[in-house]
Length: 359
Image (cartoon, rainbow, N blue to C red):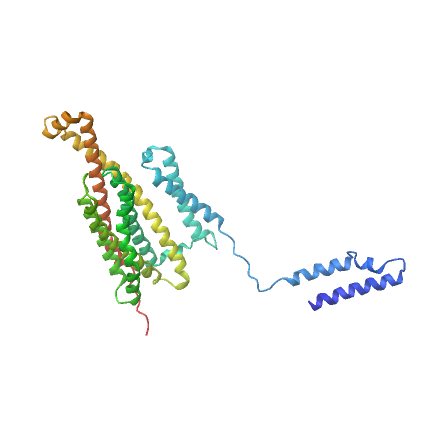
């Protein structure tokens, strides 16, 4: 700044001396004019005023963001609308399926090879803990959101429960999660138990709870009948989340933890979406199957059918067949969710073993 001041003073003094030599010029007026020497001085000084320690801002990966949006957006639409539009019989579903595949493949190639500043660091998936952890997160999300997606439809559509009763039953499953999450986190943090054991046990318990619910799924199931199975499922879910986070984040360096956490969140969302879409398809197919089987067995020679026709007509028989078909299809979806959880429970032991802290 001293250098700038000295140049400014020299310019002013030069201007004042010039004015003294020419009395017809007002010195103050001359000093306020934008003279050429002042302009040159400013041009020379501006580059010197830059902060040499300021780092350049890395470029934003707009291409990667666009490819990710196209890929995931198309994939999400296909999952949400596929069953409603008969899947690949619909031109829009076919087109968006192609867009999803092309977009995601291009996104992976671009992030790995095409940019120096990737919006998503896919290289973190090369860590076994992160890759396996994401798969476990998808399995857990399939159980959590799958049951959550099917239950209200069954409770309201078949059993005729009110929204309040639906909410209370969902709360029954949520209460163990609320009560056990902190104690489970403390247990994992103490290092007294392997997180992988808790994850596997949680998936097994949750699977058993959902399968048990499938066994009691009828068209006349009571509120209290479902409570024990929902509590078991909630206890199982509470054993998975915190140990999974600890196992995954403990397998990477501290600076990679945010990236690993982001992939876990993405896996939970994808697992829930895939589970919901798959269950809707399964429900529709099993309902058609059970309707065909029950319809073939519904004959006038059957005493119950004959009595029902006598009391309410053929429409009542059709309504009963539809209701029982729906009930059996919901039971099938609960069985599928439970078996899925039990089969993949062992995946937890593919996670890296937790390193013991050095004394």
